[in-house]
Image 1 (cartoon, rainbow, N blue to C red):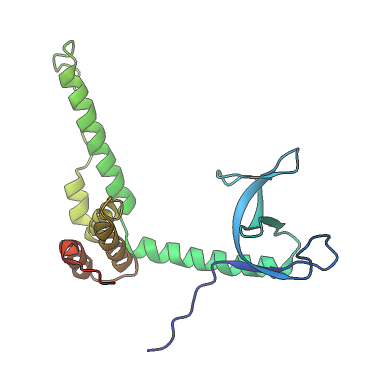
Image 2: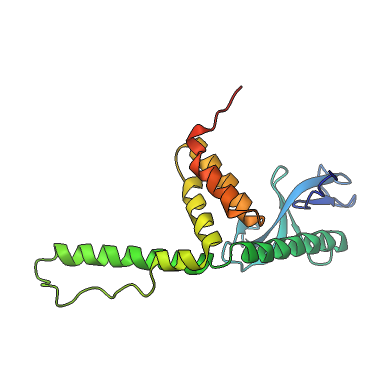
Length: 198
């Protein structure tokens, strides 16, 4: 089996020699792209809404580097963004329908909550029932079986039990990478039989 090519996920940067910093001239690595705002006090703050300036943050050294005007960093960022775009596209193909399934799940949950509130309200005699569910989760799950298994695996992944969570992660990876539904379902079905040895 050929060695799998490791995806570029972090950035390296050689700090210019003429910068007054203890790491001048050294190469640092582990940088991650983010959007940041620089405050009036000169401190950098994360901007999680995607606004602000695009920079690379080297966490270990707590150094922020602007991307613009630095061809070496711009090239690395372009490679990472292309890999992320391809991964998103592959995910959308392999887990098609997930957003529709989640929307159906939320709609059913909304209906249950509104129905329970109606039943608890003694002033509501049923003349003002909640708006019905547009499409059932089961119907969407039948239409998008890969998304349904992925969504179930996601719930396993979020479990408090580490073994169940691990099974969920493995099943999610199987579906996201284009693996067989049966393989993912097998992992989810037998998660309690997993044995870990030291």
